[in-house]
Length: 159
Image (tube, rainbow, N blue to C red; front, side, top):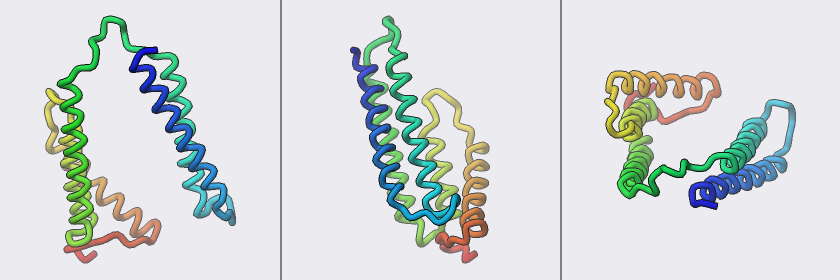
C-alpha cells in the first residue's frame, strides 16, 4: 500500500471515529422535540460519519498515477506557509473581534483568507473577494442577530 492510499485511509478512519464519538456524545443530550438544541449536533455527527465513510471508500478506490512524481518538497513548503498564514489570521481575528466588532473583522478576515487560499499562479480577484466577504459578514451577522436572536460583538459600529 503506497503512502497516498495509507494517508487517505487514516484520514477517513479518524473522521469516521470522530463522527461516531460525536454521535455518541450527542445521544446523551436531552430531546424535547424533533428540532431542538440537539438537532444540529445530530446533523453534524451524521455528516462527519458520512464524510469518513466517503474518505475510506475513495481511499480504497483511488491511488495516484504511477507516473505521478513523488512528494514535491516545494508544494509542502507552500502548504506550510498557507497553514501558518491561516493560523496567524485566526489569531488576529480572535484578538480583534471584541474591540472592532464581528461585521468588520469578519469581512476583513474572509477577504484576507480568500487571498491566502488562492492558488499560486491564479489571479487574485480583489473586487470579487471583497464583495463576497462583505456580503457574507453582513448576512451571517443578520442571521445570528435577527434569526437566532444571539448577540455578536458589534464593536465600533454599535448596532
